[in-house]
Length: 92
Length: 143
Image 1 (spheres, one colour):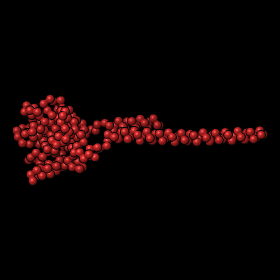
Image 2: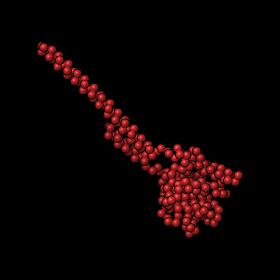
Image 3: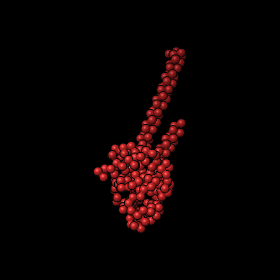
Image 4: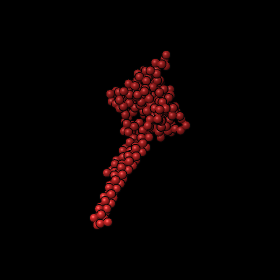
């Protein structure tokens, strides 16, 4: 093998290595982007859970009830809210 | 860049979980009476008047006559029977306001049941829905 051949082979190897490095860089970048997108979707999905209106799905007449007394069903208070409106009033 | 993006995401997440300003009045009214031992106090969130309109409601029920009397004085209710209804200031529910001063409370006190219910009205649509609900149900009752 002549000196020229050796140099040629060396240059060829260097070029191949450079190309591989470049490809690896692109691959790593793509992988990073994929991870970022996945993380974003996961965080948004978790954040959106409280926003899902389960009450609509269950066809409830209210979203929620807070009460200072225990042992009273939430639906009782929804009944009261509806009932008070329909007690006979002359100011309709 | 990525770090800034994550920080923004976290900030937005926490901002989304915060209490909307509109809930402040309802929570304030509930908190004001929740500690009273002789009152049953409930806050009904998103009480549906029809398919598209819902209102928040705060209900106060007096356990005895003394508590009811105190509540009546506080709310400036002079009648002794039947139903007393008024439009209340959103910050001071006992203070009577005119129809166009939304947001406001549509308050109804039922003497026989020692109960006062406050319906939070934010806009004309809710106001109309409340009235429609009353009309519908009361018409059905009398049929």
